[in-house]
Structures are given as C-alpha cells and as structure tokens.
Image (tube, rainbow, N blue to C red):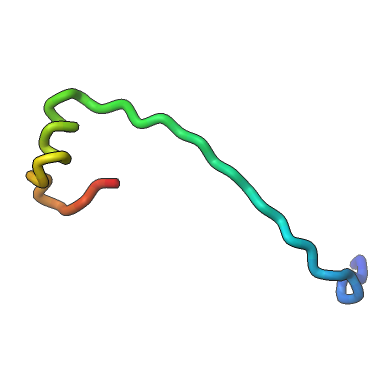
Length: 41
C-alpha cells in the first residue's frame, strides 16, 4: 500500500452538464405544478 496520510489537503472542483429532453406536455405539467409524485427536477 502507498502511504497517503502525509499529503496536504487539496481543493478540487468538478462541474457537470446535462440535457433533459421532455415532451411539451410534460414541461407544461411541471410548470403548472401538476406532477403527482412531486417536483421532478
């Protein structure tokens, strides 16, 4: 095993990007708050 206990802490930042494709009717229901199971986003 490699000894890692003496290493200094390092700040790391990650970014993520995605695309959600929905039907127009689904978008309308989300905007109107008519989704039975709660906020999908």
